[in-house]
Image (cartoon, rainbow, N blue to C red; front, top):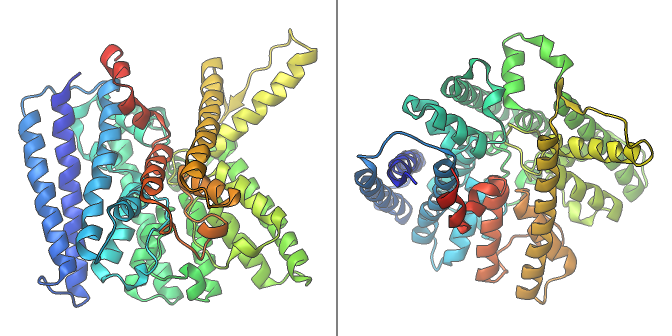
Length: 490
């Protein structure tokens, strides 16, 4: 195990976080906070801690070889997210009076994993600098801290490919010519560009600059943190909701696919099945939700009804988690549809959470093939995705991943129900579903108008771990609890 390179790269993650905290101080100063205020003092202290740890880690890893293999990459990814979560919790602890440590860790984890669940009742009253940190943490976590520094580190070589493919939902094969640094840099440019466009659209739509900046970051990150206690319902603006619908959908579409389209490579329109399935799910679910709202209200569908259905469909399936209405009071079939959308999530290689559309499509096709084989066992049926034939190993890995996620969800529900005996089954299910799949709001006592503050500290700490497991798609975190794996295998 090349621990030196892990220390060295962790120091760079801490430097990036220190820069983000510096931006929060600047935002606070612009909005009238003073350096003597508790909020800015908290960020100054956090910067000091980050720089101190960065210096320590750099000294420990300064003589290490610049070689990164799979076991080091997996260990680094898991450690970087856990460390970032702990450091990101410090401003909450130092700024908010009587802040519970588990609330701070929960909020920090929810931000960096782009989950969007909150443990605070009155977050809208936070100082501007702390509100900005909530949004900025989601924006940084959306594309991933690791992807950010992979884009600027040319010395990693092949190790960069391992970092990217394990931290993000994409793979190094998504990029042409094998230059992962250039590919990751293109992702960053696209990410900045779509964030800036979203911010301008929100400003034109009626938000002030602070609201536009914050909501642009959390929309493109598909995170869902809002500066308003009632999320988008507080704006009461059809224009803003439609803007959010467009940018949430774009942000949950495979980034590499969008970049190639922008470069004029329209031939890819013939191959990417996942994107077609994603939008087919969105439009079909919107139509179904509209019908359920018609039944709920007993009226013919109008613009408001269609907009509400479209907004909540896109918000939930992209795992953004914004709310334009209290969908917890909808009919049971509508809630069941939203639960299914939570599980599916967005496209691979995007900021969306869930198990990803591509895995659902592959699993459905595997089921179909299995049914055909039951009465025609000797027939060969190749499975294709994106114009390429899938190997049996790839199909098997998808099935195993889905089984792991479902098994983890069941085990997590058993733990939460045992730890929270007074919470209903629906609430327990929602707690796990909303955090493991990085959704944010759930149903019942953790619905869109509620929060997770009432849960025990141990439950919130466990749910924070679930968020990180879901964001990193299990393996990079599980390997931290299985040291024999990275001791024996490279």
